[in-house]
Image (cartoon, rainbow, N blue to C red):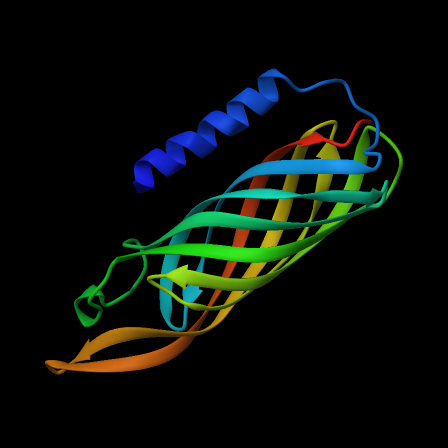
Length: 187
């Protein structure tokens, strides 16, 4: 199921790039995004890598303001190159589905434009809790490149200490490099 979802979202990204039109600036109307991200971060003292895909759909209210909702599929894996003590943890990989409200601002009316993006929501799956992401980047026609700070609060994980399971509440903080394409809202 997870692999099928990843393949489907990958096909959406590829088809959107193939059918992309020459654009200038988004006008009013439906607008969608397909995004992939890669990065690293920490869960309290545990280092990890992250890979994710998101799909976002909404409405371009004015040329500078987009509001929509999104859902993603993220995989967090322990960073085996770090100093993590892996025997203390019962999982080395977590699958997470963030669901969020997305507000985005494109700053200038050109084919190349800087933008900022904020996402607020929740995540479900192996890690559950509040989800927050703040991004800044540049739009090159229909391709968007950005850097994101992502924080997820209030989830539980189990740590094994001296043959005893201890449930801890923690927070996830990560930095991601995102690449996305968008379609809809005529330019």
